[in-house]
Image (cartoon, rainbow over all chains, first blue to last red):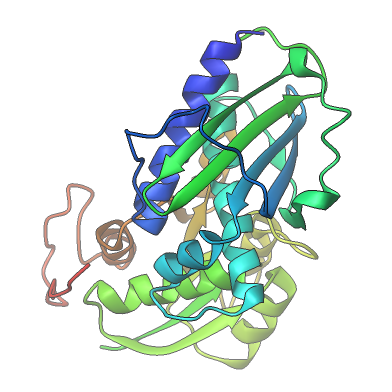
Length: 155
Length: 143
């Protein structure tokens, strides 16, 4: 698996999604080693097709309300709206990522996103050989993305 | 002529975004109905006059492709203008939707894309985005 290629596609689709849906832009001065998300939520999107796996989009607790506010154009979104917004971000990123990796003729099935707390994510079983991820520092806060494949894929 | 629109998507946030975008794109809107899946969408269609339906693909209970098939099978809704709004990128699936008479908008989208696609589906704009006459294009919006 070409991890760099996966990372590039993830960067491209995630940046585009946050820019076009949330009007949130990447902060170029972020130090990748500076920090990780400690408290937050994650949208998990399972997919299947020519290859299968899952995409996880983690967000700081501070940035999740801002995502929802920007998407909805309203102040003070409810907790459910915030979770839905994060889930939809995961859905859109996944939907754009997969054809970027598998080609436009491939047919994928994408499950409805699930939003979980970071404690509920089981990150101990991640096979690093079959996964690729990145940190996306937005002006408003940090996003972490990881895509894990169930099998080795020839990209 | 005010358009009655139905928005079908299992995400309440996405329905809100689509409705907000519709209101920003300068089209004269009548009633806006919402449904969370294909089953609810058919119920709305059975009870109300709808000019344009904006539908997602991946939904529980009845997905967008199944909903579109049902719409085309019913003589009362066979000519309904349907626009699919989805992350779907498979050429195979998109071609199938277009063969069933739907237009397609890819997520993420802009208000202008929604506006142009609705006007094209109504025959106000041609494929190049130029006016065919009829309903005036009112493009006053701030986004």
